[in-house]
Picture 1 (cartoon, rainbow, N blue to C red):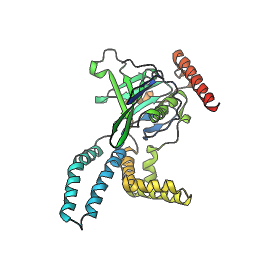
Picture 2: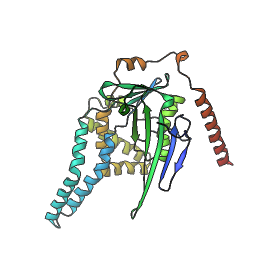
Picture 3: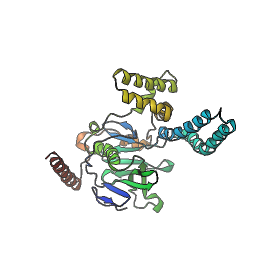
Picture 4: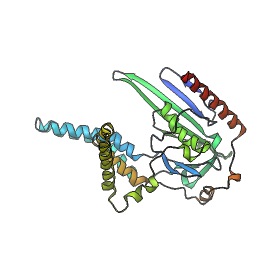
Length: 322
């Protein structure tokens, strides 16, 4: 599956596509895990997952609150209308809530594992299969689309990462695999991609501090998970208030009331602490550290591409400072 060279940008009236790999050259953005996709990180591998039950809760919570508030404030004016609002809300939200409940009792999809010492990516597939894909063959693109209506301009975007089956005898429906992250496209998608690229090309120290799902359950051990998350959430609000960071405290309060922040965090901790692991015997061995002399090296093509890109970014910085 051919794609334009990394660094290419295609703009149209209502869309923009930024091609980031192959080859994985710097984007110029700082790594930022905007969707808590980093599930495990160490000196050997990085686990990336795109399962976010908390996001689903925060999308549906405002709708639930709107219908409950409308019903509550109209109960004394017209009780029949108040009940009708509840029925309407149930009709609209019943199916999404049912899908969410079903998702809570399904197994969390396995993460994709990036091994920086071998410069390979393990891609889990159905029926216990997996691919070992060369890192420099991974494709990545940030796509962004805009629409205009009476309500104004709305912009949506994705980071799409693609992998090719290394088996030349693979069937047509098993040759390609990709997964997307609803991060808005553009620079946000580039920052998310930089988490993977920087880890592979620089090391774990290049990544920001992120949520540690592996220790999340340990932190709450001995306490009810929901009560523990609520205490952590309230502790964050109090800490910001004491530091006179009123804006941050207000955002947490707004998140709790209008986005269901504590419930979203509780479900996220429940499903991802600890996150699922790749327990294939061959991958357990593949994930063990190697002596430095056995680490895989960059290709000469990537070395040249990175050097050229870094020179371009340095020139852009000099122009901005001039």
